[in-house]
Image (cartoon, helix red, strand yellow):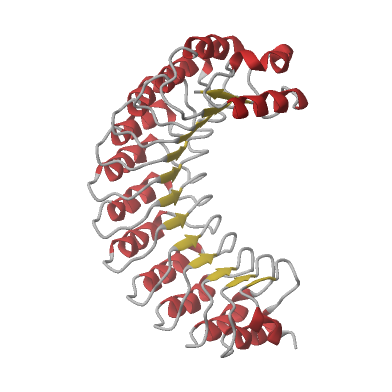
Length: 381
């Protein structure tokens, strides 16, 4: 009876439901039942292990299976489970488009198996999550190869929390520079990176066929020199990047001149910039505010929490900006956990400038209810 429930649902979540490998035989028969309409199955937090994945994959390779999204985060999988998944991705009947394998002990050998499946002309995978899977630079050549194949459809790749290092990212960039690469979003937070990989990342952003629109580099030791290299790529006519996350990267005001130049470039596409948990201080924030006043800057949201920035700076910048609004776009700057005096909530109207009265009124109503130590926003338009 349990299996037949799947036949009439497109999405099923069994997260942390004590599902084991013994249940997977029944799950497998449910996903390939002739009249099943199930397209998304969430199994994270269950002890499926490799045997459970083997049984599931038998169903995924069946011509009747319509499953497109499979989430098996924290399911006790290892390299062997990836071998079964690789065979599934290579199957002409597989419909899998999104695969979440976060927090499994896959290691490099498991990732290499997955890449073999991705290289198959039958693979339809668009999104792959491999955060915290104990990967190193040893698997990055395989990823580069998988991204380079003509029929690759992979557009989103999450590698957060793996010790890839500069060597691994430099290998990845070889694939990113290839004309067949279709990757649009790349997560590399907490990957043990330094400025040593930023030249190659910048080069990848500069390539004519680059499709990257979102890049996450948080909690890496990029330092000012790394961001200055990245900004060379951001200034390129070919760069399509719209979102850049640089939280906790050891930055100071010294890199803000380069960021200013990149944000003010006529062809800049950057709309979201996260600089949380750095040490920009007022000097860096002043340069960022200068970028916001430039008509070429397309920034819509900037996060600068925990950066030792004082409110008087933003007050003076917003007052100057009142007479220089460039468009109907409202820019949001998050400035939580900076040096904000307690009277900030009472003076919020003095730092709100912009064409949207409704947005300003909403902001004024919101601020008094929030402690100053919590999230605070400035609308600078």
